[in-house]
Image (cartoon, rainbow, N blue to C red; front, side, top):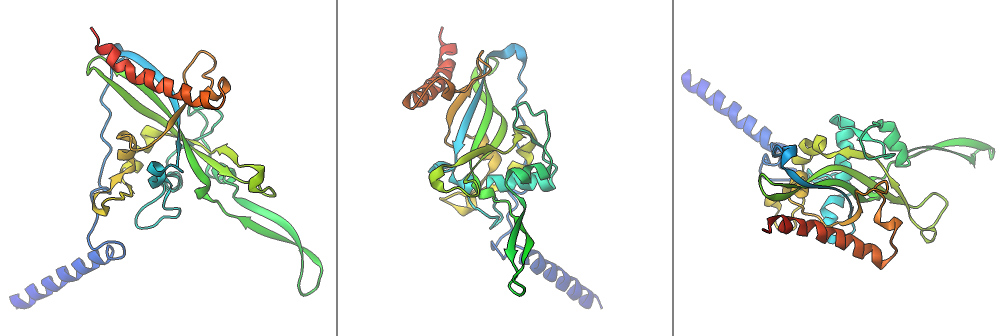
Length: 282
């Protein structure tokens, strides 16, 4: 009798093992738990008295650059991976992530899901077309879907500080703003791309979501990292477009043109990088 009981228990354990593994055989022969169970590393506390230098910086991440392509692909969820915009939309729709209006970057006016969908051009169109059977004109409603792959840039707001307690220059990302580039209906690409800021995401609020979703690693699929690692370890390419200033935080493009805009961006970056070594001088 005991042998029969042990045999039944063994069969149950074996069946449960195969059932658990059956969920992972679609994309992998083993269960991936590292990224799924990862938590964002908490920020170290910074005292106001220890901050010797602080500056707000706005920069643009262009997803067309090779280094930034892991944030753009895949254009549809696949292999347990999301593009950054699809992940943010998933967080807004299912995880309670708050999206804020782009009228300012102070995260004051929350947006609804319908507001975001309309910004992506989703909705319905009413068209008039002839009926094939009767030949009479009739009204038809055609739905317009949301195309997240049109997001090709991100605006990033961050704060750089020098902490005298640790004697280090640190950066904290404050917000992310997807930028949609698209061709208006009825226009052609020759008419030029239109740009639209979609919404602001408060980065500290999104870190838990970013930490539990992986980013493609072109060298090794077994050593992928999370979106939180990507931003915290600065695994992206970008350029500065704005720095806090007395003129209503005006952008660089408002007082420079062409090559001077790029040079001004590099000057601001170098000034901030040199700030740390300047504080170390005696």
